[in-house]
Length: 134
Image (cartoon, rainbow, N blue to C red; front, top):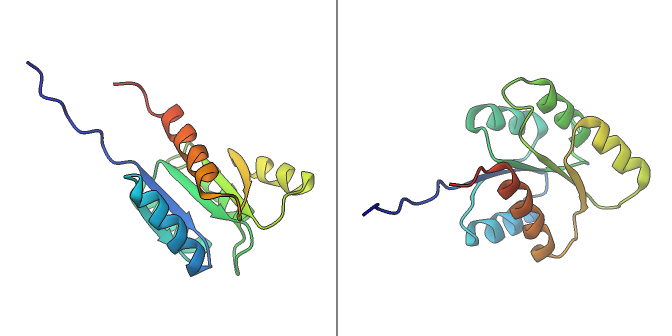
């Protein structure tokens, strides 16, 4: 009889300069069993991505220093990180912003104020799609 093994915990990295948003998303994701890392700047986010190789990155667009588009481009230029899916989060949605996000390599864009359950569904969909069945 095979002993069931626990699925490895999936990791989500949140890169955002707003502590409130990080806390809110971190609580929601941890409640669903995800390991959550957070970084308040693009540079720190890139370093954490390199160190931890998360399964998904939630990335804010508007941050001081390096904005989300620049972070996404750097992720996608790195051989070790380029396959990590990125959800770009923004306060406002526009066709121009979506085009820029996709050009930078984002998987999808979402409104930052989106209901938690919708964002959680996006996270699950993207992570499950990347995870080969057992």
